[in-house]
Image (cartoon, rainbow, N blue to C red):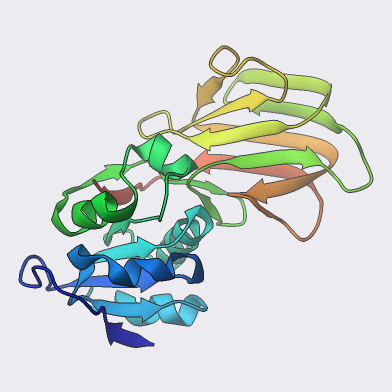
Length: 230
């Protein structure tokens, strides 16, 4: 569904080729004046994202971290990482911290007026992108993750741990990982890829758990990054 955002504001600046994707969690974004006059697509599924892509040079994602990840996953799968992406959540998130972008009204202004630069895109073997964090957690019938994980050539753990957290980074090498219980900032290991072999884990991407347990999981930097507006 496409409709103009209601409200005042300067509608003459940078309108051509810019579209707004509004997810359910970002409905309040229709009140931000900085986005007034832009074509708006309310997203319920991939078809709504596809409808906004044609002829578009910049997408403004109004929603939460999983919504931004959904958009980037779609752009990756259809080969449209040439499209600039601005992110406007209602409040600060893991992704805003990592990529140093503002939220709310300030984020809306930046989405309209900011410049894009390419940053690492972190995906897994299923083609799903993460923007804030991923977690390897014990499967439903277990209390610990049993297996071995490495970041590039560095061992992250071998044995049993409570879980692992993976975060994208805004610059190369692309991601960092830490075992639960380690001191944040001291035990982070950075690299291009984090790989796990286990007896079974729950993979959580930006707060959304996978429906089935997995024995192996890999998060890695895609060859081509994404164009972040900030």
